[in-house]
Image 1 (cartoon, rainbow, N blue to C red):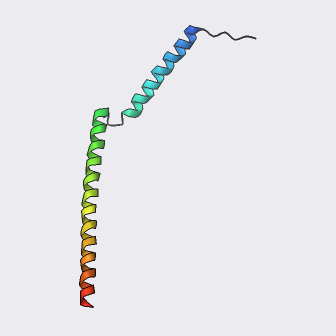
Image 2 (image 1 turned 90 degrees about the vertical axis):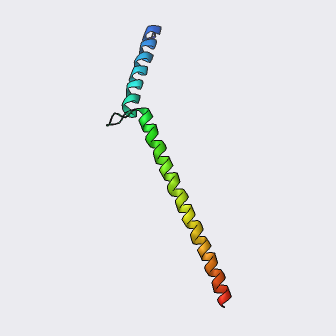
Image 3 (image 1 turned 135 degrees about the vertical axis):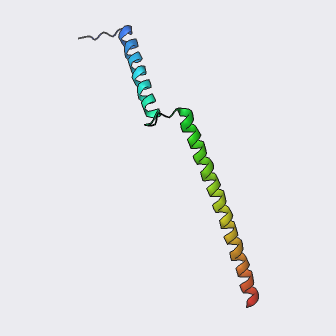
Length: 80
């Protein structure tokens, strides 16, 4: 038995798949608070900015701790 495929059926299936994919994409992209993609992107940028600031502050603290440790070593070397 030979199967026959029609262009109309193929186009219809592609259109249906495209519509279903778009609907699923929109439902995943919008969360419970109905945020738009721009709002989500803005929140992601704010989060990245805050993380960068925290990392820079931590790096400064580590630099200070290293400097203090080096100074302590110098003082201890002179004391001996």
